[in-house]
Image 1 (cartoon, rainbow, N blue to C red):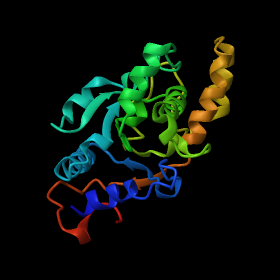
Image 2: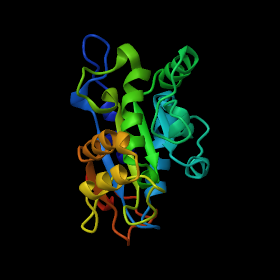
Image 3: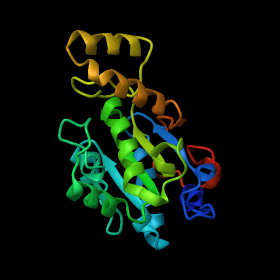
Length: 231
């Protein structure tokens, strides 16, 4: 309950024009190894939203379909990020045309929150496209220019040490890699057009605050003073 309250408080307080309020925006990474309770945290958010009749404001997504299927909730919509944001199957270019635009705006109607599970399977170019398409989908509800994802609150859940995107630059660059190396590789492979979206996606990820879940934490942790992240 406390976790859900902390999450959904970001929904309150649109500005006086009806747009999402950037000052209330939550950008958070829930990072932890397998078994630390990431899925439990996501299910808690989904059920809290469902029980408080706010499920239509939340969408659970992932680059792959399996994580979404594993986190089904009767009231919360779950789709792949490509389907959510009308991005092509390769994952880095938005679909164009009036039909795609209509589907995009229907998908984002009433939405205020995105939870992205197994987020580190998402490439930097795809993350950049998701950001741009979220603003387009929100249309007049989007916060002023400069707010990531049009002012929507976004939680990324995953393990930064697990699988990375296949043949595409990741969101996170650790000690053994660098964004310079990634961009140099793109240029050498004839994919220089992806350099801007790679740097934009990586810069966007740096705006998120990370919450680490210790390995010992399990779903039996139910007391407020023992929660695996600060409230």
